[in-house]
Length: 453
Image 1 (cartoon, one colour):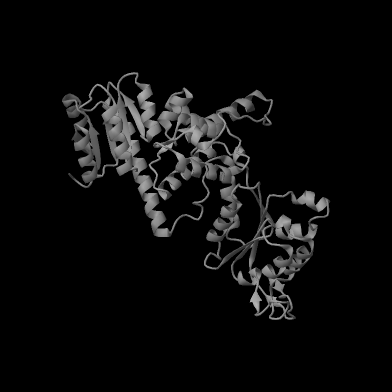
Image 2: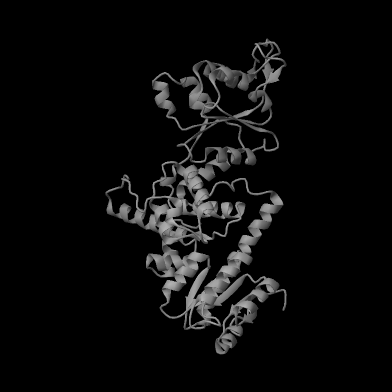
């Protein structure tokens, strides 16, 4: 076989179809297997980007047991390989079952080589894109924004804001509900900044008792208080040259707010018990889930400090407001935890998918991550079930919607397309089928709403 063409493995027991398929795909080096054992041998030897799989294989050519068993083995041995399952006419049940197990796509007999070729080429292209992404992440140590998973307009806006603010030294305030992933944004800001080779020092203002927080932030001199056996620099000083991250800054006690304000104005600190001023060059990033303007009104937070830490703001939307992102995150968590715990879990059941999509996720990304982690551990088979997630089967919540019919229709269309793409893992063919439209119509709608740009 030549090295210039992609390899394609055709698993088919019908000699007539074997011959037809073998000579229909001139752009591929085609290998043919007629049963499960020979297919696995070819898979190990050739490592093909794409496999077409007829579910009816000997010794059960009239059934699907051998086909599904082989599909499971292919996904375990070569999870990156794109499997296109070939099914009988109107056999949508087994086709959708195969896709739920992890198959890339399906195609119904009778076979039209031209149409099947489009699916195979698309699968091969996706395979190479994924391989190149992995190679680049290995070479460059991963993307600075790799922790930010999402395709919703809300998160794309957040990513663009991060990319613009990262090279600057402006004090940045990150606002969002608990569990929305504010710390991930801080790490991205650090990785994309000119200070990426210096330290990122974090301190949670709500987790440390008030009596200890001042010494943690500003440090102390030897003998400053009982137990101060040696001079110890604080977090601000340790972060010199890098970035200081003050998490839950809304919980900072009033006396320390005044001291932090002076540091931000003068860029010098004094250790507890010290008399000399120490200049410190840091960029300050703060985060909170609290409503700081409300705290200003109640006198709990200093207005002048608010404007010092808020030269730029990043607002992180709650998970329930991120159209289509919930399933993307859920799949990413499932893949990570399945590998971490060496579990054979490949996906979610249909009931689980519907529940994930409907649930409002009051605990945001953190709650989703924890539930998927537990579900992967508890799952009995290769799919996470609704019971594994321990979610209600239906959830609802009122949302503010416009009354203008055009706006309502366009918003509904955009949300439906994003949700469908998330549910099918970005597969346009399955998305168009799920939405009940043709692929050209779907492409036009995606272009209209800026989806996939």
